[in-house]
Amino acid sequence: MARLSLILSLVATLCVGFVVQRVALDLFLAEEFEKSEGQLSLYRSTVVAELERHSHLTHVLAQDSFVMAALAGADTGALNARLADFAARAGLDAIYLMDASGITIAASNHDKPHSFIGQSYAFRPYFQEALAGVQGRFYAIGTTTGEPGYFIADAVREDRAETQGVIALKKSFGDLETSWANAGEQVILANRDGVVLLASEPTWRYRVLSPLSAAQKQDIIAARQFLGQPLDPLAWTSTGDGQAEIAGAPRLHLVAQDLPDGWELHYFANNERAVARAWLATAVVVLLAGSALVLFQVQRARRIGRALRRAEQEEAQLRQTNAQLAVEIAERKTAQAQLQATQKELSQASRLAALGQLSASVTHELGQPIAAMRNHLAAAELNPKGAAGLGADLNGLVARMEGITRQLKFFATSGKERFEAFALQSAMDSALGLVAPNLEAGGVTVMRDMAETPVLVRGNRLRVEQVMTNILRNACDAMEDEPRAAVLTVRVWAEKDCAAFEVADTGHGLGDENLQNLQEPFVTKRESGRGMGLGLAISATIVKDHGGHMTAQDRAADCAQGAVFRVTLPLAEAATGRGAFAAQRKDIADE
Image: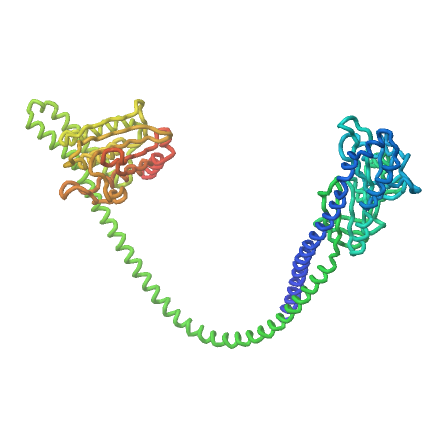
């Protein structure tokens, strides 16, 4: 086991060394990249400055009076001397003037063996671009001297007339190559075709970074750009992620592509320093990890010795604990038996409490029709002539009491009565008729706002009427002894898949109470003897059984003072999938 642990530790150390080597190499390569980017930026600035340094000279010479006179037929001797002086001072290879056909008529090298005078350069792209009205620029090997150079040309026009000729200059970039080579750098300047124009290594010059197409080769031949050069591929490969291999050696590769004329500057940086630093960091980490491994093994041996001694002590304690546990198990069995007996007593007490609430519900629910009967009898005594319809009213109230008896039995078992479709407007009319004596006694004005088309819900109409009656009676009670006019607003409407009815009063409002508190049994805001506080509790249960929702809140600040009770129920089309369907399923199960 110890041998396996040692092997695993060694493998882990090697893995750590590998990870450290990769991370350190990436870090040090990033540093080298940052340094190389600065060097590349410096070289780019040098190239751009060299390209633009004399770009204004041809434009100035195109307006020179000696140049225009020579094109007009004057003697070119003075112009040749003038161009030679300009070329010497500016450090240029040559400055020369061509007529509109491309024949050189004056040149700074007029007295040299390879003079440009009499030579035609109409085939050169820089001459053609100048004739077209733009400054021509071109890098090529000279057809007369055989020396490479950068050509810049501008058209010569007098008073913006037709082009009379082209003034051009040629400059060498040999100093750039020399400075790159002396600095020990690997730098390549390539044109838009990928042909190497300048390089720190002379053998890379006039090589191509990628194979040329047939069209590119044809253009190069037509312009006589690289006479006598085979334009072989350069021995290099870009490996991606800023890496490349050139001349068989891996290098960091950076490219500046925003040079004039579509040129690119490639910089190859040596990555050996980054690799060496990465391996040095890896060696240090592996050495530290090895030392830590040895220290760990020593500490591990000490911990094992201490653990053996603790195990012996714990074994003795375990035997003692087992004896104590046997005693605790016997005590727990006794306590569990006592708990079961207590649970049975609590269950019996819960059933007794439910029976007390049910009896209170019977007293409250029968109180409404009894009060209505009392009102009818009192009205008959005051007006004997109106007693003719008393029997019918009393029969209706007796039927109401029978329904309440069935309903309370239904309420006690969450309901076994069948649900049916009925209109909320009709149920609200019945509820208003039941509380008519209360409305008349309180001088309440009823405002109706009911939908013209029937708002059909599916449920037990008697129980829904009971909810409406409870809310209406509470509203009447809330408006008693209030100085404001007693106005009761009743609304019934449908929205989406829900039906809703709303009762708004001008009473004292909810105050500090909320609907959750008012729904608690025996909670009431009436004075003692006028209510048991079960109306909203029963109503909340009925609404829940019908899959509905009841809310209550004070009226808005811009309306009269009072409270608004709202009940939403599923429409008959949607009720089957909600509370009504669930209630019916419960009915079937109970049967």
